[in-house]
Image (cartoon, rainbow, N blue to C red; front, top):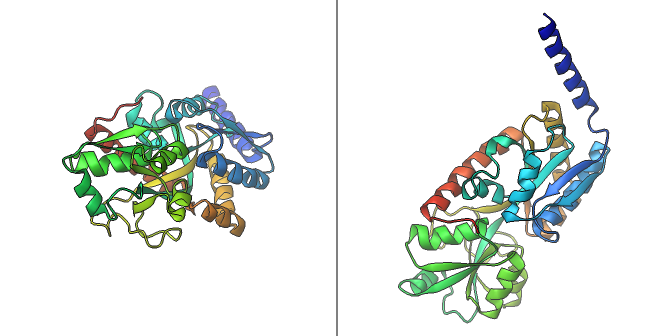
Length: 314
């Protein structure tokens, strides 16, 4: 009887604490370097979510190991709602690429804030204006493509396209971020690249890069003349770089719901939608349950590419 009473008291105490949450600032861990798209969206959304919750969200960058260091740190944090993770689609890749760093079960997915397609692009000197021409060009030769980092979804989109699906020999050259990889293709070393749309976009518009195809389900407003992979003759390629919020497993359900409600409210604001559009991102949102199902599907999809491509973490 005493044990049952103790359990009931603990549950009531937990529920009361969740209802009062938050009573102090919330740490938002971003497992990548400052200045990238994840960090930018963390600061945009974090401020607005904090305002709705009545407590500031303090952004803390914990970069390293392709996002694993910061992600693992959040997994080990108390599940009280005062430490949250804002990360990219690398979360779904690293479960397979870096086994042991953390597990899907270590987290509760809250919401997919925003996503953007990956873009395959080339140096304008390369004699390939379509995906078919590019695939013909690299067939039987020794070529390379620039990647923003091993295990990023742009890397895996290109890896899957060239090497897993078609068994071509196109070697990834990994750079420390999207900016350096796009700049390398602008300089012509190498002449093929893959990246989330926002980084190469300005180079494409200025003519310094040529866009080949986007990995979205439909053409994107920022590049209306660029075909999707399906339109370009490669159906089944629908990949996104996404940025999302997670909390440690065991976080009380009322806290999860309050965070979800706040995020979705922020994503509906015209100002936020305009800011995301300027970064070539589209807002997503939705329920924690729907996002959890999406994360599970992403882990399965990228896990297959990692295994089939024999891709190893650096």
